[in-house]
Structure formats: structure tokens, C-alpha cells
Length: 185
Image 1 (cartoon, rainbow, N blue to C red):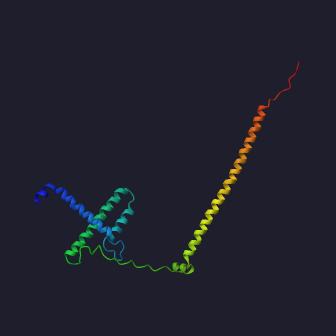
Image 2: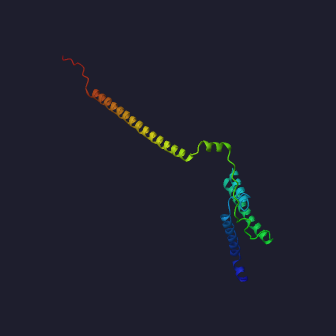
Image 3: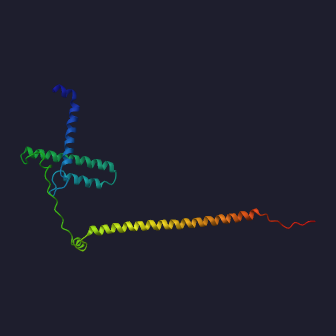
């Protein structure tokens, strides 16, 4: 084993880091995304979102820094969970980030929204009627467009015929020679 590590020390170290990074990635992937108590990776993700939205200049560099900071934060959450388990503060190393989330509290509806629902008890039917009205309006617009296009085509044809007749009249005038009275002497 010692000989193996002497020869392959670099690959071994890189492999350990890769496995650890992949493990953290999978833990974050399967961890809850919403929790009333903001436990686990949720604060790290909120910080990441805030930092990414705050990027104004040099966005690629700013986002890269935010992602690295988020990865470090996620790693610290995993290490803190392991440390808490070693100290006996939690049953398992993953109890601090793989847990059953507590649902977010439902926000009380505003009075205006409750009044709207009271005045419009069948919103689905209203939406269906609006959808049908929109389709009818679109059909009417398409019909009006076709009617207008036909009118424009008819006007263009009439103008084309007018131009042809004028050009034929012009050609007829230029083809008939104008003869002046010739005097026979």
C-alpha cells in the first residue's frame, strides 16, 4: 500500500477530492429545497441566488466566484453535520441537511383577494369564456385581414388595368404618325 501511494499519490489525492465533491453534489441534489426553518443547504442557495442577481459587471467572473463560494458553503454544511454527529449532537451525520422539511406557513389571503373570489366563484368558467372570446376575436381579425387583403388586391388589379390602358393609349398615340399637310407644288 505504501509503495502504491508513493507511485500514485497525485491520482489518489485528486480522486479523494473528486469523490468528496461528487458526494457533496449529490447531497445538495437530494436535500430539501424549502423548509420553514431554513435548515441544511437552503441558506447557501439563497445567498448564491442573491450574489448571482447582484452581478452587474464582469458577470462571468462574478458568477464563478458566487458558485465557488456556494460550493464552499455547502461543504461547510456537510462538515458541520459530520462534526455534530461526532460530538453526539445529532443521530446521523446527514441529519442536519437530509431531513423531512417543515412546510412553509400559508400566507393569509388579502381581503381584496378573498373579495375577488367571493365575487367570482367560478373562475374556471370565466377563463374558458375568455379563451373562447379570444379565439373568436382572433378569427374575426383573420377574416377582416383577408377581406382587407382582397380589397387591396382588387384595387391593385384595377390600378394595374388602368396603367395598362393608359400605356396602350400612349403607345397608340406614338404609333399613329402625325402628318402635316404636304403641299403639292
